[in-house]
Amino acid sequence: MTSSDDFSSGTGAEKRTGREVGTALRSDPIPPVLLRVPPDAPGHDAVAEVRFYAMHSYEWIVEGDIKACFDEIAHPALLARVRERVGDKRVVALAKAFLKSGILGEDHRLRENDTGTPQGSILSPLLSNVALSVLDEHIAHAPGGSATGTADRAKRRRHGLPNFKLVRFADDWCLMVSGSKADAQALCEEIAEVLATMGLRLSREKTLITHIDEGLDFLGWRIRRHRKRGSDRRYVYTYPARKAVKAVTGKVKAICRTTDTNLPLDALLSRLNPALRGWCVYFRPGVSTDAFSYLSFYTWQQVGRWLRRKHHRSAWKDLRRRYYKGDAWWPASEKGPLFNPATVGTTRYRYRGTVIPTPWPSTR
Image (cartoon, rainbow, N blue to C red; front, side):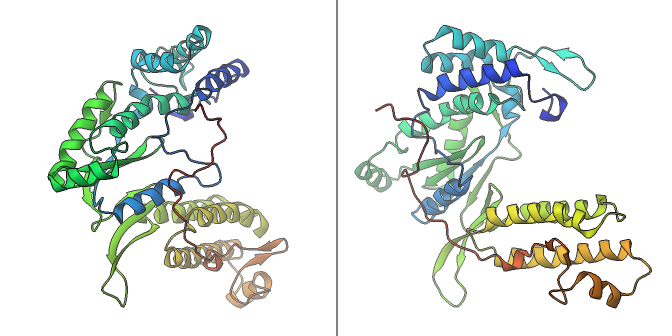
């Protein structure tokens, strides 16, 4: 299976097929055990749910990683789950034709595919979500899972049995366990067996079992419990993971390196500002002040080096006079200044639990 860069996003006929199948699947929504993520808060509800459970005795976490998720989904098992939701055989036939359509590679050769959903299509995320709902349903209805009542959960803990919750965002998921590390390891093996029914495998190298005091990376966030400064109390904090910070600084550096110095400063800022603003909006609901300050300094430094390369014969005071007008130390062009991440205020994302709006009608 090739990556999404190896083929186009699909023809008009493919898009119409995707819309028809997608509409049919959504008319019978995936059960509510799956976290529904609204478009105005991508990933934030999942991170808030991990934080909430970690503060309520779910301290051991199975950080799951499915090996080549889009590439190895078994077609017979996936189509069987589609048939459970869609009664129209024509729509099922369209979904099957989509899965068997093959992949056009960079060498312009069409290759047959017996497993997986072609990445880059408008239908692939929905079909992979249907495939992974087998995990949602298993965890929800297993003893100690989401469907277990409060009294039964308390009884299980008194008898030394674990309780667990699944938090999933697309193919990124983690299992929160209220129990011991041995319980988490046993549940990890159980999940591997459940995923095997869909032709999927857990990556042994990337699937980790960690304690909340050690922390975990999830959807770009670092979630960890540690002592509050100046206090003996311990809280669960969320802040940008090192990998996320490294990714955005690498992007800033790449933009400054690839933007031609013959172009005006506006050309550079028009590429930098949207990237910086989007990153800060995503990481605003967390303990992100230090990360924003570091990103601000790093960007200022990279833009300054770009200006020095552009005017390699000019002195620094000349560059300040020309490009640092409003603020003596912050670059700005005629159309506006460089976006400053350090000026972005942080906030707290409130945990909403199951009270999450969804555009799909209820089947109840």
